[in-house]
Image (cartoon, rainbow, N blue to C red):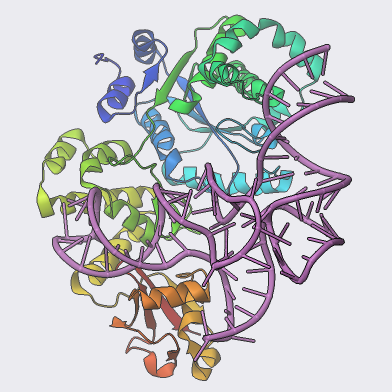
Length: 417
RNA sequence: GGAGGAGUGCCCGAGUGGUUAAAGGGGACGGACUGUAAAUCCGUUGGCUUUGCCUACGUUGGUUCGAAUCCAACCUCCUCCA
């Protein structure tokens, strides 16, 4: 492994962020000699980013932390086209309003742990819609197209693969890398940006930008990618009981976020602590040495730290406390995720199956029915085997709620209103 | 523009007239075992007012007692030729 001298590269390298880099030594020198501006692009296809993007966000954080200037680039323009890579069918086209709404949601995530503003080290939020939407085709071809070598584009691994297999490659897909390359140039001109970072799947696209920038701006640009983060057992990261692990609290409750980290596989604890928390490395080294049941303590710390970063210290403490009560004492914790139901409905009696569907624990009555048969359903910690069971006001606990559980980990409180 | 091929459940994929809600695998969920881990084993995996009914094999129509399976038109995708 290369020994880096700059704080930023050293940190990234020690924490396991670096997968590929176009010129590690030169980049290291650059970080030593000046305040570097670097960017990472984010798609605006959903209202929130999910944990998959967290690695990238953490890199922005470390840039800021080590005294450099990160740019978070919203793909307001490229999302309108839709990145076809890795897709076997075209994404449905999003409207301008949808994209704007998504952008706002995503921005909220960043505000949690990056400082935005006008200062020299504040994070810049840019949007490629600002320059891409106004492009004129012929102008673009004359300015950019003449510098782009089709020969080189054909050399790209992703392209070669498609050609060799005689698989269809649309012109749109072929162009996507140009737009992304052009982003890099535009950011170099506007902000003096010299580095683009991203996931390893972006390596080719990023390199296109490096090449193009060198030609157009006569500046040495750099590329750096992170490894694809999978769990130790090989699964793609980011699934939980509740579905995708979204970063926005509206899409995934802090408690569920905490649980996601708490359920990390043993073999991943050290690696995740390095990537997803800001804890010092010696502390992490100590934690990852823990064995057996003791490792659970490290997982809790991971969950606490990760949740704190995303949702704040208060939410993290609550989540931890809720989990402790729920799992270690088996008691009813008041801050479990809850849904409200009209008091009148409860007095009339709510069918068990309907309640589970309403709480979002089951997808349909049939699903709920199957779970009852499978012994997964408990009400107020009492196993229920009768699918015709009706919930009434009598089921309210002393705390005035009804606790619905599905399996050992999923719990929802029904709160009459 | 011409010729050929394909469209099946969350995904992959079998099925070429009848016990097919549709083999098999993956994924997901649940149970057992554990440490809220992994691995392993077991179960579930269209909907509903569930001993029954409804909806489903690209879309629409047709043949038939009966169609995912046969026919026609259309839509979408792919490959090759130009």
